[in-house]
Structures are given as structure tokens and as C-alpha cells.
Image 1 (cartoon, rainbow, N blue to C red):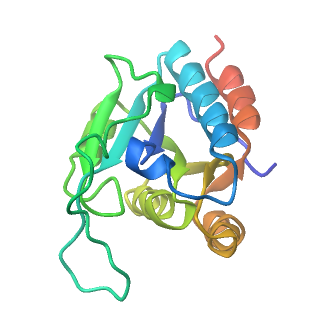
Image 2 (image 1 turned 180 degrees about the vertical axis):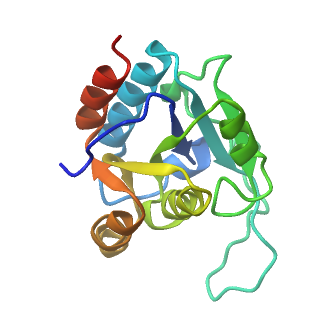
Image 3 (image 1 turned 135 degrees about the horizontal axis):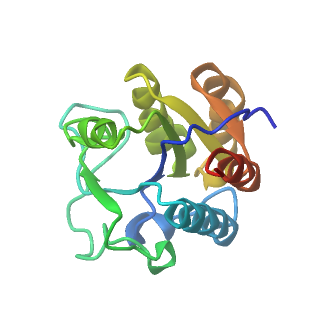
Length: 188
């Protein structure tokens, strides 16, 4: 465990756990990832802390070597999966880039709530999760990443992000380690 503290004003950011993405192959069983995300979301909600649900409904127009066409997708492709147990107080962000902060107003929303730290989870570790975590770090948030609440399509990409990138922009830990710290930081 390297996660050391959870600020009293923390938010959970859940990246791209939507119908069209969770059905794709991943290196870690999606059921386990969803279990950890669900436990974290419930803990944040029970402590009265913000939960942000992020989905992707498009992509930037720049050229890439890999196809990224989001045309001809099922209508429910960007719908959140039921396992997230979306609540009325959850803040929803629909993005059109890998990161959840680009042109979404998420930074202003979190800062208006006094949030100083974000816990980032979801899919894919090396894309949506990593880019969102990098953006949060650049915007001055303390960043924590629950490594058992994320996965990727490629084992080497997941490992590179969790072992090389994340320690440079935040702290990592398991969902349970983060919840234990949350319980300490929210007690009177």
C-alpha cells in the first residue's frame, strides 16, 4: 500500500463503465473490477462524498494510427451499467476525449464542492483512467488510483500505467485500503 491519506473532501471518478465498453475483452475479470468500484461508490455515497460517473460518447477528430470510429454503435452503447447503481446525486460527465476534464466543466464542479482529492477508477487503465488522473494532477488535485478497480485490454499497458505512471502523479492502493482511509478521515 502506498496510499497514505484521503482528504476529507474527496470525490470518486468512475471512468467509462458503460455498456459498450464493459463488454469488450479485458485482462482482469470485469466482475471483480465492478465489485471493487461498487464498494467504493457505496462508501463515498454513505460518507456524503461526491461520485462522478463518466461515459464517452465520441472522440477527438485528430488522426490516429488506430481506428477510433464510434459510428454505427448501438444506441445504448454509452449507457451506464446497472452495477454502478447510479443515484440522483451522482454527477454525470459525458466526454468526447480520453480525459474526463476536457471541455466538461468537471474541474469547476469539483472545486465548487471544495474537493481537493480524487480517486480514479474504471476502464481503460492506460487511456481514460490514466488521462483523467493526469489531468486531475495537472489541475492541482491530489490523485489516488484504486488499482483493483480498473482494467485494460492489454496487460502490458495496465502494468506500465500502474507501476510507472501512477506513482508519479498520485498514490495507489486497493479499494479496501482507500475505504479504510476514508473511514479515518470522515470520523469526527
